[in-house]
Amino acid sequence: MIKDLLRRQHIETPSWAFGNSGTRFKVFAQPGVPRDPFEKLADAAQVHRFTGVAPTVALHIPWDRVADYGALAARAAELGVGIGAINSNVFQDDAYMLGSVTNPDPRVRARAIDHLLECVDIMDATGSSTLKLWFSDGTNYPGQDDIRARQDRLAVALERVYARLGEGQRFLLEYKLFEPAFYVSDVPDWGTAYAHCLRLGERAQVVVDTGHHAPGTNIEFIVAFLLREGKLGGFDFNSRFYADDDLMVGAADPFQLFRIMFEVIGGGGVEAEAGGAFMLDQCHNIEPKIAGQIRSVMNVQEATAKALLVDRGALSVAQAAGDVLGANAVVMDAYNTDVRPLLGQVRAEMGLDPDPMAAYARSGYFERVRDERVGGAPAGWGA
Ligand code: RM4
Ligand code: MN
Image 1 (cartoon, rainbow, N blue to C red):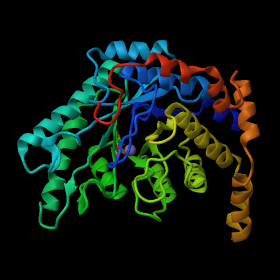
Image 2: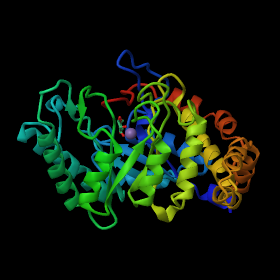
Image 3: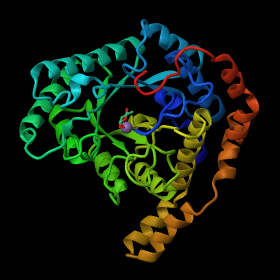
């Protein structure tokens, strides 16, 4: 059963992870970086080739704008991957300085809504079922704008997008505590996202970006609660030491990732039918990108395998008996198990190399694209 779930696990890679990224101080250019969305798909296909569990790629619009989305989807299929969530981007135009869908200027709001609707058109053209909405909207200073009016504007925009969704489509509303807004964020936390989604209906769900909370926030509680309400649409996985660091998931706190997966499994969210999207949302600023994605996928697999190993029967008995130490020991036993041999076996049974990092390094793919991809503009933030 455990092996079966691990084989069927589905982790989505983000197209933007393959482009150059950085901080506000510097974007370091790396060799071999894709120049267009087609090359990003080729890199994402490598992650799937060596892990076997990363069959879809999320797009970011306009970074991944192409003339023919049908052709992009067809190329993905040729490469053995599919198009995952469409991520809208209403945070990089000058027009959005004071917000997008919550901007005090109705013309800016209309422009932002048009973009969100265009993203649904792209879902239609690519066969994507999921729209991910993240708004950088907010204010920097007390009094700058009316908090309640901004909520009203947000609600109107979400209604418009919700009404446009077709059969089998949904949107995920993402929250973030702060940044780029430093005083009020219009969707700062899961409660705000949840309340908006609840008003709209089943096709609106919350997405938990693990880097978007205040330090010390108990993310696994949020996961357990949203799953119970049928409102957990998925994850943007990454890890952080300080704020929204977008580091490789499981790098900063593998125990937290395990605790999250433990709640996901407990709530039935690991099964494909539950519809949760397990997406990576990361930036590999200083490490090689494809290998960074492979490592991230493996980190999620390891946390999942450990969480699957928890002896739920023994745990229930200990919990019912009020055996605090016994219950905790059941969970810690699973966490402290080295699951790497098990995952190696699973991969071998899938016809893969048990060591994806080494297999990728041996494949020569990086050297090939490094030599081939000369000229053109490397993809990155804003491209
Ligand atoms: C945002 C948010 C979105 C992601 C962008 C790149 O902070 O996490 O999900 O699409 O970054
Ligand atoms: Mn995110």
